[in-house]
Amino acid sequence: MYTPEPDVCHELLGHVPLFADPMFAQFSQEIGLASLGAPDSYIEKLATCYWFTVEFGLCRQDGEEKAYGAGLLSSFGELQYCLTDKPEKIPFDPVVTAETKYPITEFQPRYFVSESFEDAKEKMRSYAATIPRPFSVRYDPYTQSVVVLDKKEQLSDVLDNMQGDLNILRDALQKVS
Image (cartoon, rainbow, N blue to C red):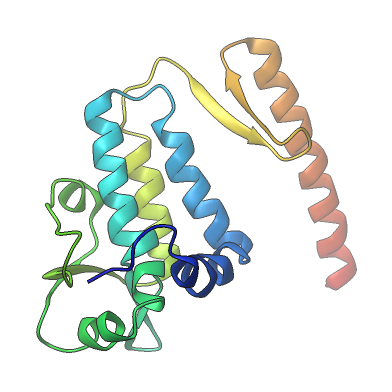
């Protein structure tokens, strides 16, 4: 059903356009960050959520179902199939999604549909916050590294950076108004 790895069509038609969108790239990255320090059982659950969102996600836009998963966007046949009444459509809930088994060699028998892409992002953030981890992490875009937030000084630095960003936003809002 799927082409063998490396599947250049899947990467170029599915992932590249999506990862070029900063909101989508952040969504994918946050799923990865949520796995750091998580128990193995949660890593598997996050991988399943990734499968049903980044690879095979559907969401509503202007009242219509739209595909946003790379596995759908790079497969003409499955893209047509997922938008029919043949597969089961379930409202996206990461708790339910994380426990759902899926085939990797045939069209998906079920898809999870978000009310919007933003809805999927917020639900995944809420789900990730429930994962037991011994520490918190943050991606630092300036050093392009993951920072483990386990010291008060680090938290203070993050807060200072956020305060600087808020000042810039406040100034920009005043200029736009």
